[in-house]
Image 1: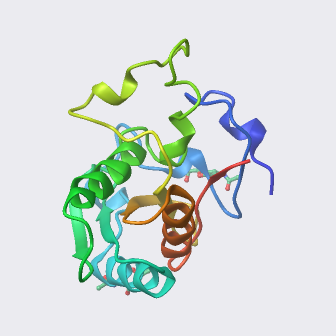
Image 2: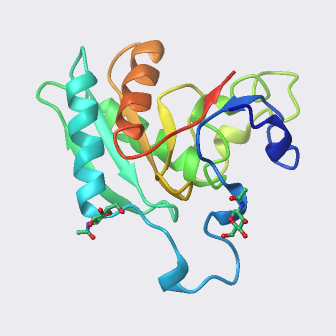
Image 3: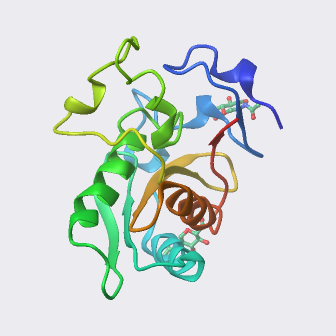
Length: 174
Ligand SMILES: *[C@@H]1O[C@H](CO)[C@@H](O)[C@H](O)[C@H]1NC(C)=O
Ligand SMILES: *[C@@H]1O[C@H](CO)[C@@H](O)[C@H](O)[C@H]1NC(C)=O
């Protein structure tokens, strides 16, 4: 389903696709803890396992809740040490903007001359290339994000999409 109309107010006016996203149902101001929708430990382990299953190289895999707090992490055997931080910052890039786009949603506009040039220097460091994906549950709630680092960007995107989709759905740049 095309959701272009729903994201007209988002930071990025990219065209995205997903099955069940309801952006007004994500964790908003004024919600109480019982109304919030956070990824739980069972879902987080599912995301990690799906990422491992989809990996063709050793990856670092980070799962954050919508508040950017760590829920689960795995450094696969022989995964790059430098990718620990990258995987976590990919996921943080997604949660920092309420899961409105994957990490590479900022890629074009953060280039020299772009209106968001330098955005990766904010928030203690963001990652604007692919491998960070929002996780929406089957009811369309934004529940967290997964960041994968270890392969090429295209491999990381494929792995993180498969991981996110193991417990619901995600968004990709059209
Ligand atoms: C989205 O969620 C909000 C808040 O729960 C609800 O009021 C609204 O009807 C939902 N919209 C759709 C299209 O499901
Ligand atoms: C985690 O969430 C899933 C999906 O909503 C649910 O089926 C499961 O019971 C939950 N697990 C725990 C431990 O809360």
